[in-house]
Length: 156
Image (cartoon, rainbow, N blue to C red; front, side):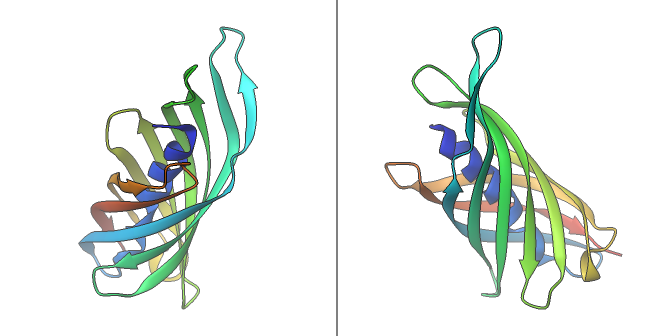
């Protein structure tokens, strides 16, 4: 898994979060991501490497066919082969009606990513919840991928 996959998982986590609008609901969505910026490289004093400030955009599609725009920013650690070892970040998901939901994510290589609802505006004001995301397909260069997310969102 390369460093772009970390952004992938992050974005995927958020892709379905926009699906709930009342009380606690299970939600599922598929997101189609494209890397906007890989971010800037860094190296820690212990030699660990990574990238910070990477950005991706996705079109997220709920099970009912409705869509939202998703923008994600994150950091990722990589090994000497350029494969993702872990990452974290946040996503802003914007619905057509202007409602917004904010989601944080954490990725560990070889495991599904996890996401947590941080709140939002409109129908998502005070929202909570979370779930998991997985990459279901990825372009060979890591610059685009499709992910599936599931979980629950509780709204007021």
